[in-house]
Image (cartoon, rainbow, N blue to C red):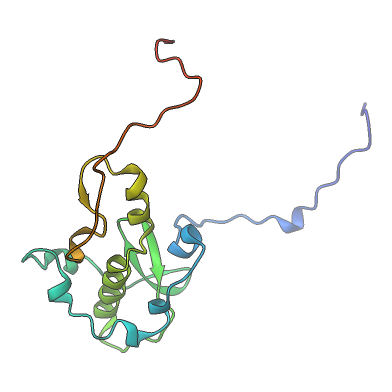
Length: 154
């Protein structure tokens, strides 16, 4: 017995997905010019842009794919940065690395944005990829929850 009219659900609008990743465009709600213009990253000197004398971390950066679009993985955000321009054959990893370095140097990584609120110790805002980077995390305090009694236990 029903108290009112039964609701009808339109299941044709639902779809299942196996999507497991997330991309930078979804996190930030925007794209960046260097995702579309290879000329904006072509001149990046990867060796000069690499922190310290160790280039080994760059060897782990490869061109990948997200949603069928070439992309590079930004481990600081844990998301893909899509690349919307044609990449010359044989230079796939080079361009992935250059786009990532540009993204980090400009401070557009969502992980870098979160440092302002969550960095627990002093560190360069833009990481070691850019000299003269501002410092964040000097005055971190633990977050508090209003009306939370610390003495309460289960």
